[in-house]
Each structure stands twice: as C-alpha cells, then as structure tokens.
Amino acid sequence: MENISQQIAQLRHEYVSLPFTKAQVAADPITQFKKWFGEAVKSEQPDPEAMTLSTATPDGRVTARIILLKGCDERGFDFFTNYESRKSREMTSNPHAALTFYWHALHRQVRIEGVVEKITPEESDEYFQTRPRGSQIGAWASPQSEEIADRKELEQKVSETEAQFKDQPINCPSFWGGFRLKPERIEFWQGRESRLHDRILYTLRDGVWRISRLAP
Image (cartoon, rainbow, N blue to C red):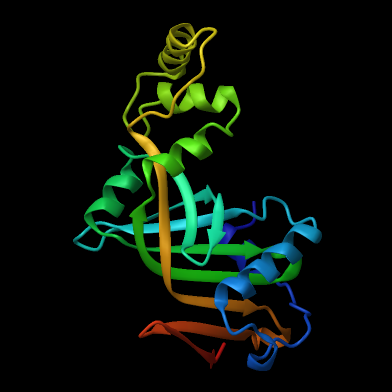
C-alpha cells in the first residue's frame, strides 16, 4: 500500500480565479462578507454557513471545531451552543477567538479574529424557537462535551425529554444560547495561480477599518 505521506505529496490543485484587489472591495468588511457569502450560496457550495471556530484556554491550548453561522450584521457573527460545553468554557475564560470559512467551489477563504460575548437571553430564545422540535429536544437532552457511557444513554435522555415536553412548547434552556464574535481583523483570501493568492485584510483601529494587502 502506498505510504500516506507519498499520497499527500502527490496531491496538486491549481487555483484559477479572477484577480481580487483593494480597489474591488467594499469599505466595510461586513458588506464584503455578505457579498462573498451570497456568491458562495449561488455557487451551490455545500454548507456555505459552516465555519471553523478556534478557541484557546488562558494558557494558550488551542482547539477547533466546525459549527454553523446563524447570523451576521454590523455587530458581528452569531452562533449557538451549550453554555456548559468545552468551547463555551474556553470562550468564557479567554474571549479571544477566530472563525474560518472555506468555500472550495470559489477557491475562497475568510478568516475572522476578534472577541466573543454572549448575546441576550431574548435573542437566544428567539432563535431557539425557530429550531426544529427535534433540535430543541436535543439541546435539552445532550450534556454536551461530557463523557457518556454509550449511545443508549443519550437516546434515553432524549426519550425522557420528549416525555417531559409532550404536547407542550419547548422553551430555551438557561444553559444554551448564542455567542457573538465581534471582529477586529477580517481577511479575504482568493486562491490564484502558482500559489500567488490574493489576500485583502481589514483591521479595526480606533473604530475605523483599515484595508491592506498581504503577500501570499
């Protein structure tokens, strides 16, 4: 069997895209993000809202996972989770975090760095009420990031929760809700030929977004 390192070394993909320059971008990075996100949706990129959330403990141990974007406006980027999960504990102790989007269909990447904060309970409940009932049940039933014996234990918790809320509306748990990442740096990356990629960086300084270009 071929060595996996050899297989990896043989992988090659040429990025062919139109130029992406400072002159083309919006003055505000949220406006630019919404433009690219819309184009990702139109390109039929699978799960365009999927993003990597990177967090770190106070002593600098980094973890990352794929989650889903659930809102974006001038205030920042919203996502939801169990407040007792590992990522929530890390964001509570160290609010500096990063988001990364990769839209393979367009050879594009967006990197966002900033500080996270919890959104209001009212905002969390408003979103929670839009979730399918099965997802609402799951939020109550799953002790996210805690060790469980097996799948059967989880299914038992789901059954118990279904019985608890039978024929009743399901309210948002106090231990579940949203975070908002308030961006301080946003980089837009466009894959180009010969690995000479286009990288446009927005940096927030004294409330004003500065735009610069980075070498690939």
